[in-house]
Length: 276
Image (cartoon, rainbow, N blue to C red):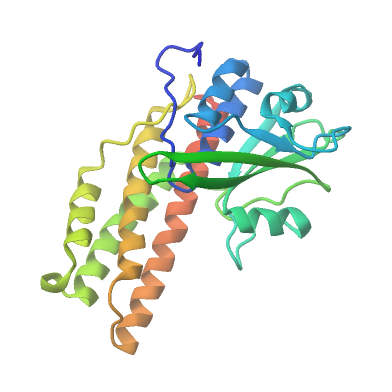
């Protein structure tokens, strides 16, 4: 596969959740803004997967190559491109059938044209993984849906990238202290200890972000991904007493919200470019 932009590399076969839609949002925004080539957008989306397809294009009865969606989306420019991460009880600005499908996937890309007379679109990935753990076969079919009216503003939309980074940093300290206090440091699993050590490094994540991405974006994404790994491990730890379990669930829910906000803001900033 050819990469037109120097430094663009394919992502791994099994991306962590939220990175697929996040990367597509970032590169789609950069492409609509003229900062990236369409070939690079497709290359980052596909990674090592089988070629992606898209379902829901007007005048198409079934799935077609993802590249076929680009001319339609190009007509949306200029547009705001955002990552949406709905969970039960927090729809992230979506409603109806788009919300139902996005909830099942856990991630989506919203394209909202600046022109009020143009339709807004939602891209939702459906990922199928087969084969072995060593050689997975990953296929992705995107669902393209027009959005009635305009997407609602997500709860985190007022946050800017640096504010999201500050909130995330505070959540790092809160997560570590809560896990240490109610989990009893001496009894934490080796996996939790290793994850906390990695979290404190806050380095190592490599993502192919588009040209013009703010320098803070990679730092925010690195911290968010490491913090999310700690939260996932903490949720799987042994049950605690009823009172301690309530505290752990509440604390981790707050941390998870900060992680989602960070993912949304970082990828939105990459989509918009340094001018954001």
